[in-house]
Image (tube, rainbow, N blue to C red):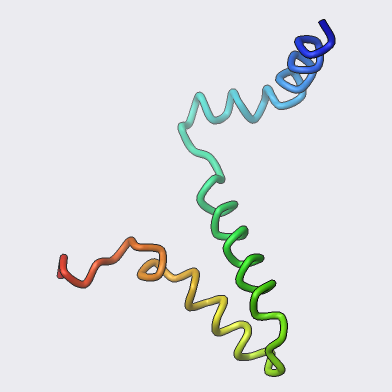
Length: 75
């Protein structure tokens, strides 16, 4: 079955990364998620004439408060 063979090839290729995750329990999922948000905001802010405004918008969207980590009611 070609699908199973392809899956085995992919798992074999990525095995060092999989083993590292199993050993440490750490992954780069959070940084990948933030990078995805930055790219999305940059795409939406493409028409800004001022580059500083585009960078500020990206920075504001990716702060911990904007992502829901800090709730004012908890303070």
